[in-house]
Length: 367
Image (cartoon, rainbow, N blue to C red):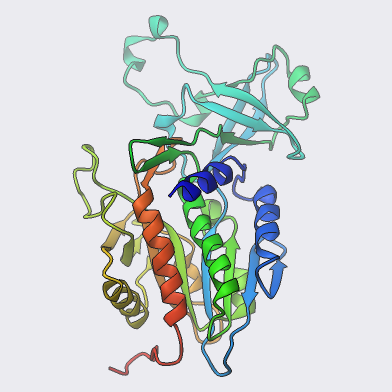
């Protein structure tokens, strides 16, 4: 587990605001190149590592995890040096005030420490004491006195803002910090790449580190359209409900194993969700059971990821499944997961990929 801890500490410290993931893209390419047969980066930044299969006529598989994170973007530089901002992705306003952040230069080459201002307690009006302000009422204090000071640093409208790295271990098994969504999935993906380098897959397998999931949930669509895999598995987090406020709204808890998705849905309009391919989902569940490992069954309303759209791509669609690592406090600076679940997720996805071949009948309507 120590290796997982150090990997997460390293990866969560790399800033990768959705749409501005270049540092993470470069890191993933560096890690994939010595392991895969081919590595490709498309125009959006999706990194695809291909491991050629050892046998012909086997179905192709794609395993993916997004590398971007939620954050903020500077929308205005005030004359007095304070920065106005708006959200990139589902950042909860209630966790923002009083938080330390990094404000990045427009070219992404440098960052400066700053924090989000909060109303002085002694001077807070009574009607504002229990109010969470919207982002247009908030500001970032970067220690500047004029707009000219800010601009001289290379910060301007459009600059990225990310939570400051704060990864730490809490208790015996828990880790907490920013961007565990979805650097946990990235850790699983990198471990799978190392495994496939030593244990070649039967059919061609693509590992994809995808972009812009937190902003528009569609960033990986081009790579799916290009590769047209027969089946795919998404690696991401899901909300653990074992805290006093959620009171087990859904039966997902830390320390009880990874979760196999049964259904998720955004919950508003037609933004979509995923009902996994029944046979692929059952294949994953049987694999875990035969490994004598615990797992949870996930249904959730209000949470989707980028497999909500990719399953309908290509000429025939993609058999899609989803493996989740439970996590508390999503999109906050203190996202928290259990190392035992992460380690189990590593073992499970490696076994799933090893077993995946033509003997799994993915045809629909054939019982």
